[in-house]
Length: 297
Image (cartoon, rainbow, N blue to C red; front, side, top):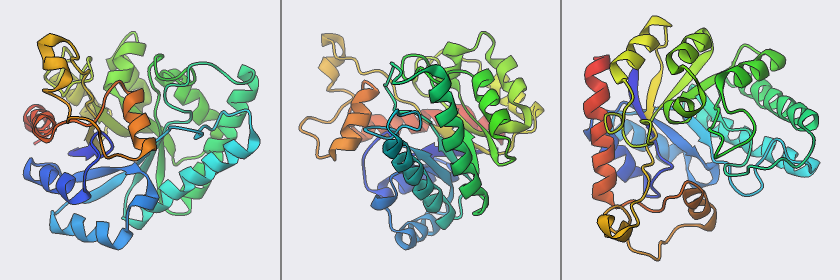
């Protein structure tokens, strides 16, 4: 196992993100799935400069991106978007793409359960087939019930994996989401077994590991016992203290207005967040490294 980090939680130049990660002992990156933002050649040069590898990328599900949409053209656009994320990961030598099937924050269905499930199975199959040709594994990520209504636990994810029936399709296990949804998170990890393709780090309160109540030594031990040897990807997104106690959010967030594209801004707001201050964000990644690195070295 090795320590990795996502990049979507703070909009910033890639070089700043890579330099920070490298200096703190991270060894890989899981890129935000926005292929139009990145030059493959320039990103490869930065990875080499900071002695990092690309573990993969994650789909950024805002706006009309939704495999379960009632509109066929919308579903097809989403499949094409996800294929472009596969191309990004493959072009950088990545191993996985984490797929969230539906729009984050969409909590009401647009069609019958039977229809939406069928569309999702079809869409994930198309993406996994495409990814297989590029030696990329697809990791399906369950989210908690407050961010999606479809695929909120490992049993549902494993059911979809069984129905798609392709060897390069597995699970991305996020401890923040699944400590909410699983009655026994350790048992859920064991149930994933060899289908565990990616692992996202966030404590029970979505703070960095060690700043909540999860038992990280036990979690890491369990990962070893089931044979997981991939990335442990930092994905903390703590709640913003907008009260007078937290200086109305100013201790965590950059002053507004934020110079961020509308899609990214909406995605951050959908996570009840905004643009973190650099020193605050540095501390989050440092805390993850402090807690996790001794458990895997």
